Every structure is written in structure tokens, then in C-alpha cells.
Amino acid sequence: MNVLPDDAPRPREPSDFPPSGPNSLASFAQRAAARLIDWAIIGIPAMLIVFAFATVKNNQAQIPSWSVVPFDDMMIAYEVTLVTWTGQTLGKMLLGVRVARLVNGTQPDASQATMRALVPISVVVLPLYLAVCYPFVYLTALYTPMRRGIHDSAAGTVVVRTR
Image 1 (cartoon, rainbow, N blue to C red):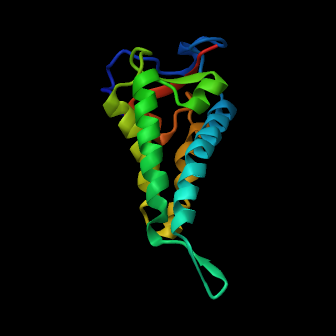
Image 2: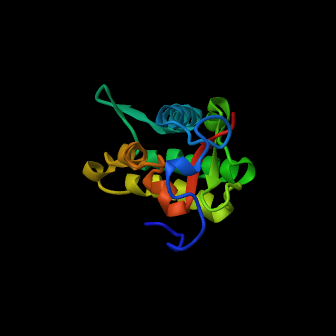
């Protein structure tokens, strides 16, 4: 799914981007490393919140059923705020990549940043056996010529290098 009409002027293939340097397509490795950094930034505080409410019964830790909510909410707020404000999360800043509108390369607006954040998180609310599909939302970037994941296609964005 792409939010842009087929006749809209925009890059349509990898050769429409510089081969290297600023505004070239970010590699999958850069994107994955940035995502892992972002998960750590959000995951550690979210786990602390969950552990504060965990109980021990019969020598087994019991984690509340709502435990996924702090991570989801914090990740959405983090992603939407930073991508709207700067075009980058902290992980993307460290790795030298940014999110750009596919149409003109400018910074995404709030609706695009929200779409990019909600598509991956929406998979988590599925039953557990389907929630394991969460990584596949990001892995789809491996199989598209312009390295755009499902969340990028839905939001009309692309991830490019800053340096």
C-alpha cells in the first residue's frame, strides 16, 4: 500500500538516489542497528515499570497482563515526537540516518510519523502467535529495492543517510 498516487513525482527506484553519502538509501544494517538502540532506550525504562508491578508467587515471577502497554506507549510517543521534530530518533542520529518523505525528501509530518510508529506496534496487539510477526514489519525492508519496510510504504517515507 502506498499513500501516493501512481502519477506523483517521486523517486521510483534506487538509482534515483545518490550511490553514497548524504541522501543515499540507508543500509538495512544501519536501520537495524538504529532500531535496536531505540528499543534499548525505550525497553529498559519500560521493563523497570513492569518489574515494579511484578509479583512472586510460588517462586515464580508473575508479570501483569498489561505489561506490553508501557513499551508500546513509550515507543509510539518517542518515535512520533522525534521523527516529527527532527526526522530522526536517537538511534538514527547515532547511525547517521534519517526518515524523509518519499515525495520530496523533507522531514515527515506528524501524520506520517504516527503511521510509521503505529504499523509495527499494531502487530503487537494481535494474539501472541501472530505478534511474533512484529520483526517481519521491519524485515520487509530487506526485500524491497528501495529498502522500504511496510511502515515506510504506509507512511510514504524512506530512510536515507545523513553523512
